[in-house]
Amino acid sequence: MTDTIPDAARELAARLARRFARDAELATRLADAQARLMRANERLWWGLHPDGVTAVYGEHPAAVDVAFAEHRSEVLGAPDPLAAIQRAHWSIGGAFNAYQAAAEERRQLAAEIGELIREFVDALVAAGWTEQEARNANVHDLATDQPTTLRRD
Image (cartoon, rainbow, N blue to C red; front, side, top):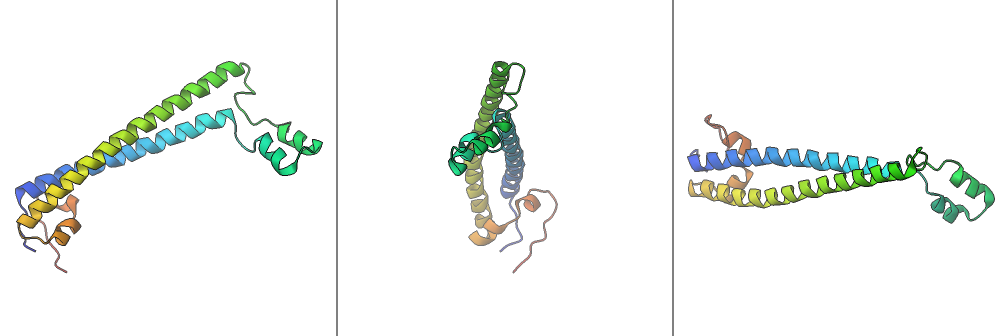
């Protein structure tokens, strides 16, 4: 390995570092959308479903009474169930769309990162690094304008 870090490699490292930060933001958006989706879904129903209790315990009247004793549905217990179902529906749709959008952005970002990594590795190899050294390089360290101390193994 050489101690030479070409300006092009530093610029590529900086671009990669920015995209890695963007990926972290997208991961947070995905997690948020998933949590919103789960919360909206739980407004419709949470806990054991009466059909599940009936399937396990049969049609015994006591099991049916337990299954239906508390419906565990925010929307069915609402003063206006239809309006509550509609709100849950729109919440689920919105969360799903947000999840889809973030997932697509992350997919496109991943392709872009892959291309940048190839360019980054090629720039370091051209400067005398081995392919393995280039692949193991710390992008965040190389992205700075500060002289980098390189560890030789």
